[in-house]
Image (tube, rainbow, N blue to C red; front, side):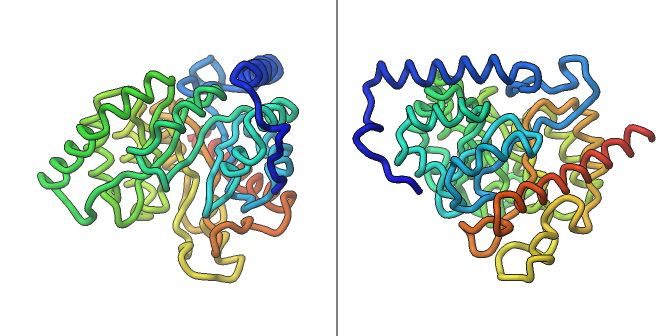
Length: 325
């Protein structure tokens, strides 16, 4: 990582000028291909397609300047910025300074589309909301907080309590034009399909959405498709990610890669059909976790990009298949 220096210390006026210029240039150069949050390709009259975002952690702790040129190569328009321990690009932003980071985004015609912040949790995002607003970033993904193993009335009641506690934080998100997406995760309040349905039902704000991770749910394609239809437009992020052989212990690389679409056994066609049926307007990330965390999924940026594109081709083929049915 390149260290920050005194040249990165800027006044508020300088920062606003740099980020405004960066955002303006990005909007101008990417207008033909960028699709903002809440507006899918299908919504603007084109054939249904996935709107890809690239997760920085797929490249481990690589320097952000090496990752940004890969975004458009992966068919994406936006970057999802991850902090340690999965990536360290959020920390790199701090070290570089916001002006320099905005310049790098502008240079590579990339927009900051999401900040992932599990460590801060849903109740600790105030400063991230403000940072996101400065970069025109409309989404923050985080985890839920609460006891695991609940079901039925007890689960619904606990989700309701979570949502009530979250309301002032959602008000702050709205002030900064940010949506908070809660990802379902094992050993967590939001570990089951029912917990996500309750979150959808009890959500008090359009600024509270869901990051749907099939990896953390039963690997039944039809059940996952049903859940997608049930959740509908409450999904803001869809992780194209399956369980494969898991991501908690060191495995041979070929087994670790089974988490990716087209590698493992999960047929994504029913999931894609469900996304098409609901005219999904959120983001999609081709995703996996390496072991240990913080390393790239493959050794070089070129290899990571090639592997992501392998999965993207698989998803495109499955989309073509359901289009013929």
